[in-house]
Image 1 (cartoon, helix red, strand yellow):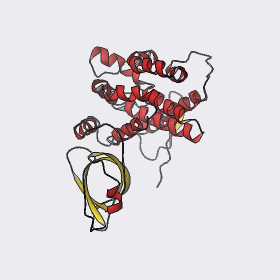
Image 2 (image 1 turned 45 degrees about the vertical axis):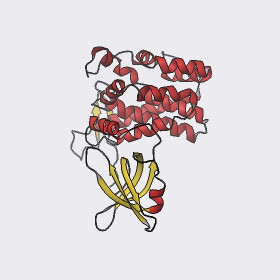
Image 3 (image 1 turned 45 degrees about the horizontal axis):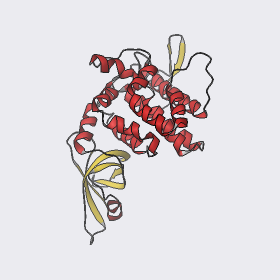
Image 4 (image 1 turned 120 degrees about the vertical axis):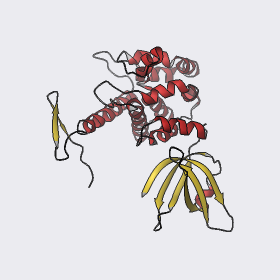
Length: 289
């Protein structure tokens, strides 16, 4: 085992006379894992309990060893971390850490209202985590919307960063990626039922995000115009005005098509290299052996 994962750091114990330290952490549920680490690694974690990204492996005796530890600067407590990880099915708990890491990356003042909004509306966040992203296309399972949104935000931010966009534009792309489909939960909020219902989700997104969008409009009209362009529905023949629109569009497509390809082989034998869906040939993703 040698994995980079998100975990809740409960406690870190150091002794100035020893080169090692002990650490207790939770990935999900109520299972507390005890690990050893170096004094230097433990010394950098001076804000526990906290959410952190850690690199953990096993020594020859099977003991957990933390190789690196990076706290995530986000306003979160243990009970809320456990609540959100418990909401996701087994195997998807890491999405919680990825989501809160993305929120912690929103540091510019103009975009802070979007982080504050989602952190202060647990009933909206719950629907966001539970919903499908589509009825029968990509991410069409429980938690699909949450997974798709995290993926699109990550791809948009890092691609914009790689293409030397300003940090303000990169973070605007992150916000757009994270909330570009949040309007899909609008019918659930109105009905109170956890049932996906198709609709004009781009318009619904503006309704859900009305408050932080309004605050952004008073802070910075240029960033408001950019974010509005990223979130709005695109009519036939629409020509993008911002380079970031292309980055978000490709991120959305990459996430959707990768999941769609993977999903269509879940019930097929391993020797099937391709299949046909609605007249379209789809090839299985090539796995590393």
